[in-house]
Length: 330
Image 1 (cartoon, rainbow, N blue to C red):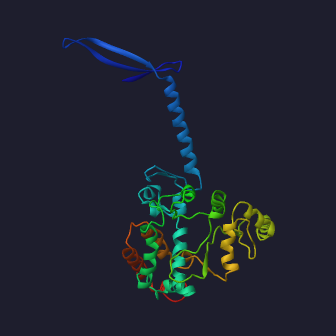
Image 2: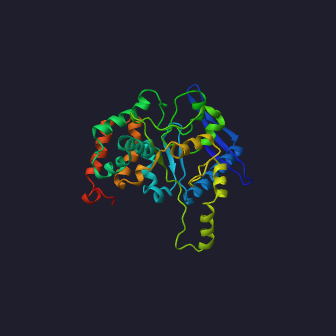
Image 3: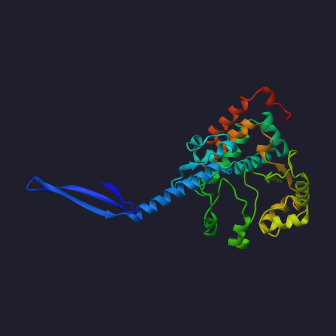
């Protein structure tokens, strides 16, 4: 089989086979098929793919694609600047290694403050509370049981959209978390609410705050006057109203929201005297945070046993330089 390309742009596919009679080749049969339309379609697809790949390669945001089986098939080069890994390395990582760490950092934060309030964060930093301590084994055992007891979906490590699961009354959770509260309240009305994660046998009178996207002005900005006015505006009631309008929680003391679930989260601190805590990954050593980003989701997903995962975390802490294992943050 080969192709014949004409000057007028048409393309024919040519097939040939020997003509056999009584076991003897007496000639050859040729057949031709006009495949011009197919060729144009395939060429258009090639050009489109090339164009989109070029856009992805030049983009600052990380663009990635995944097969229905959960296999990463493409990662844009910009990932190296964001995460420090080349696309080739990222494509070899498992799902729990590539997920955003925000949610498991939230979970680990609640586990820590559930054990010993504010000192829970400091004790993990200093080593007073080792990662593989009895208290942590017990707390993370409850954490892992969310999946093993059917309190969450079996595809917790790969699921990225579970609104339909919630609406259908199924156990549902996504390890990456979600900020799109409005999506759930629109779909479920008053049948959805906020709660403090059940990682402690006693009530946790604390709420972990996610640092979110920081707003700042660089000292080398060429538009400092405009930037300063924008930052000032972001502290106003008008800005809070805009943030609330898109389903976000304004980060202004005393502000409120129109979304009932968002307001419930604010009321934990404002009306129930909950102490506000930072996320654990903002106060622990960088090496420990990096290890936790991989190990903690694997514990929840049932890919790593609780004892094995926490032992690995303890080993990472013990490998830190002595200067980074003291009682003072360094």
